[in-house]
Length: 235
Ligand SMILES: [Zn+2]
Image (cartoon, rainbow, N blue to C red):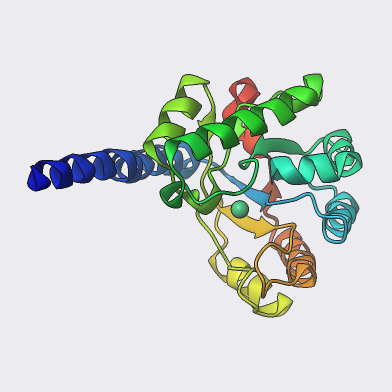
């Protein structure tokens, strides 16, 4: 009897986490195929908006005339609606990034469903402005419930190809150089307009972004949003 219970628990865990891992790798492969032919570079910002960091990033992007994609946390949308309005009015793309940034493998089905319900509710409250089919899973990971829900709701799961880890305490110059040394057409760059990690510093991302934009412009890279990558389907 004891063995059967263990077996049932193992099957549930393998389904809940294992299928999420397998599906993530398949979806990541599809995502890489999608961007492989692109001549553009895609800047993406996760976890915001943040009162201290997001306005500086928006100022910089505006100064260089570049549009990016912001994957917003539901909690932060409610905290800073004026910044969400500014992001949208500046014609950047937005996508969901969970309500509370829960880790999919450490969150059961109930907690996961609650997070999905809450982020959907927040985006619906933005009306037409909140209409998006873009979703970036927190930590780039999925559990089975998230996978089924987001695909059922027709969301496009967006990953990244270049993560300079602006949340690990590196300097802005280090983060900027890490991006610039690896930047190629089709790169999807992961940055953060937040200070979620204890050792992260929003100034690092701002300094890195300035360096990236200056040099990328000299090297004649052109930028686009993830919505543009998918065309009208991205909305
Ligand atoms: Zn995140």
